[in-house]
Image 1 (tube, helix red, strand yellow):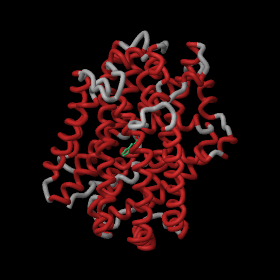
Image 2 (cartoon, protein in one colour):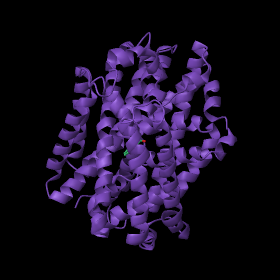
Image 3 (cartoon, rainbow, N blue to C red):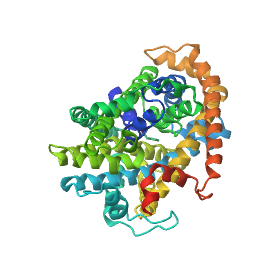
Image 4 (tube, rainbow, N blue to C red):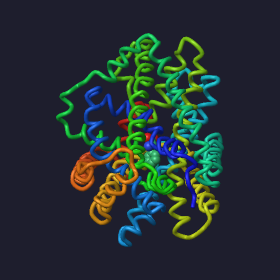
Length: 476
Ligand code: PHE
């Protein structure tokens, strides 16, 4: 039976999974779009009503059954094993594009030395670096540089995972604190640049009227889900390696607050620099601020090349931070599925890890072509907006009703430093399912209405893509 070498190792691994690319390029953007400082209210409400309760449930189920998610589900009831598989397969699909994004970061880490994206970072990214095709159905030329970077990422994941949780524990002891320090450096750099206060004002100035909009609340719940790596068997498999009697509740609070705190801090690093860019270019903030891929590979690099002092250094720090933030999220996704396969088919950890990493890499090759970026957007859109919310909903029902919320609460209270009251059961059994159903429903309506506009009906995600990259629709 494998075990974490310490509580610290488990906590770092869980925080490492939660804190990832989503904290850096998703949270700040989602926050400013949904009311700035006022968004913190729905965000924290979502954290406490769904995020932490479900995290406590996942940690408990993992440590009670000491098995990966599909097998733990089977032990709860044979009829729900598929929910576990759905979760770990979602994680696997996310890992495929997540690793491609990280391969891009690795390439950009090297590009930072010469700041070679200058003078037009957008043109460099889309045309020179990606060689973007005109449609997702055209794969385009495989970019050898990205291909090697991808091979490097998948090989690293294999080497980290195949030996087991002890080696994961050693890696996360570095890959969690290091990017946090790098982010702190970037934040301090950002805050000392002229114009940074304009950026921060834009990020945080509260617009309380937004709180009346349901879509703002939906964004908060979706962000919490993605960010805490819930519903994919990741936290279940990590908790399955806990020694018997390990704390649950306090660990869940620490993980969740560390995740939220990092996201909040990333906002300062990102928006201070965007404020500087606005100051340098004279453009208004709302033309500069954007999230997602464009932020990391176009806007931020543009701002970096305009920095007065050692721009390459800050470029390197930024991409190194993304890589180290991302790697522990990426391998946590792979760990969820390999353990499922290992438990199900009774094969060794090495073999399961090798097979999954190989398949992940091979599918990922398609994404290294010029059409890859479209598929990344499409997969991300569907998995994070739909699959995770549905699986999360099913998990609440399975844990709350089939397995028994009271059983989980009793277990968690027996082993934990903090005791949870009846509120927790209410959140898991009643509040969360209702909130998640509303999210799913509203997202579906949004998708359907989006579908009636001018996007190809077979790939609605492309719609989001074009919204995120307005310059693409101009150029192409
Ligand atoms: N939580 C990670 C992030 O914020 C992403 C992630 C999603 C990790 C799903 C694991 C599973 O970037």
